[in-house]
Amino acid sequence: MKRLSVEELAKKVLNKEATVLLDVRSTEDFQDWKVESDHFQYVNQPFSSWNGNVDQIASDLPSKDQEIVVICARGNSSQKAAKALVEAGYENVYSVEGGMRAWSEHLEPVKIGNLKDGGELYQFVRLGKGCLSYVVMKDQEAIIIDPVRMTDKFIEFTNEKGVTIKHVIDSHLHADHISGGHELAKKTNATYWLPPDDADEVVLSYEPLKNQSEIKIGDSPVTIQAVYSPGHTKGSTSLLVDEQYLLSGDILFIESIGRPDLAGKADAWVNDLRITLYEKYSDFSDDLIVLPAHYSSNHEMNEDGAVAEKLGVLYEKNKGLQVNDAEEFRRMVTENLQPQPNDHERIRQVNMGKESPDQEERREMEIGPNRCAV
Ligand SMILES: [Fe+2]
Image 1 (tube, rainbow, N blue to C red):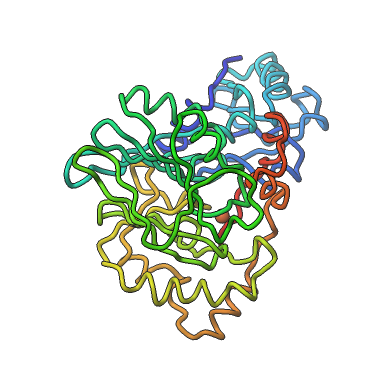
Image 2: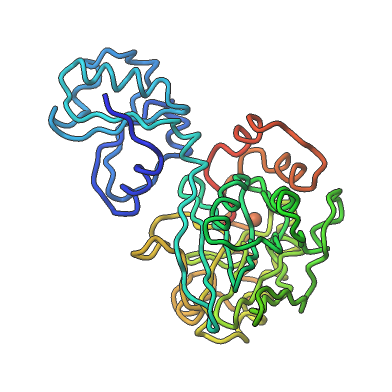
C-alpha cells in the first residue's frame, strides 16, 4: 500500500487527473461532503460494512491494475482498507494520509497577478472546504484578507517571500468557517480589521473597517479601499485592491450570490443584498477582477486553479445578477436556501471571541462543505 499526501491529492484535482476514489466513510458523510473532482470516479463503501472483505465490494472496483485512492475521515480505516485491497491483488492502491480532516486543512496558493506598480496578489484555495483567502504583497509588506484557521500557512508563505504582515482583514463575521484573522494579527503584531456592523457582540480587539477606509502597504504604497456592501451580513464589506481587483467577500461568487440568512435574517437583509449587487457593484468598472471569499464547485475554477472572473462577465453570466425585480429577487434568494452549515452558530461565537474551543474541537466544527451561496 502506498500513501498519498493531501498535497498530492490536490495536484490530482487541479491537474484534472482521472482516478477511482474509494471513500470508506458512512454514506451519509460521503453524500454530505467529499473530495470534489469531475474527473474522479467515486465508490462509497463504508469500511464498517465490508471490514476488509474485498470480495464484498469487488464488483464496484476497477480492474486490479488501475489506480485506487482510498480515503476516510482521518486516515485510519483507509489504511486498513488499502491494505486489504493490496492483499487481494490490487496493484496501485493509495491511502490518503490524514483523510478528510487533513484534506479540509490543505491550502493551495495560486498567483492571481501582479499589482500595477510592483507587488503581487495570491489566492489561497482551500480545496476541501471552498474557502478563499488572499495575500497582497507590496515592497516588503503584506496584507492578508479572510485568512482561514490555519494561520501558520500564511506566516510560512510570507516568511518565504520575505514580507512582513502589516494588516489582516475579515470582510465580514464568518459563519461557515473559523476565521484565522484575529489570531494571525496577534501572532504577527499586525492590525486586525473587521466591519463594525458585524461586531455588535465581538469581544476581540479590532480596528473598524468602515466604508471608504483606506489601508496602504509598501513604500510606494498600494491602496486597499473598503466599500460597505451589506446583504450577506449586516457589515459585509468589499475591498478594492489596486483599482484592479474587487474582493467581494461572500456577496458575489462566480456562479452564484451570497446568502443573507446565516444569522436568521434572510428577510431583513435581502434588500441590502439586492442594492449591493444591482446598484453599488454595477457602478464599478466591468474590468475589475472579482475575487470571492468562497466557491462551491470546481466549475468556478479557472484552468490554473484560480477562482476569479471579470465583473462584466459576471453581469452577463451569473444567474444571481439577472433578476432586477425586487420581489422576484426576494423570492429567488429566500426560496433557494441550502441547509445551514454545520455548527454555524457556534462558529460565529468563536469568530466573535466568545468561545474558545481547542484545536481538535475547531477541526470538528468545520467538518463539511461551506454553504455561503444561495
Ligand atoms: Fe460568509
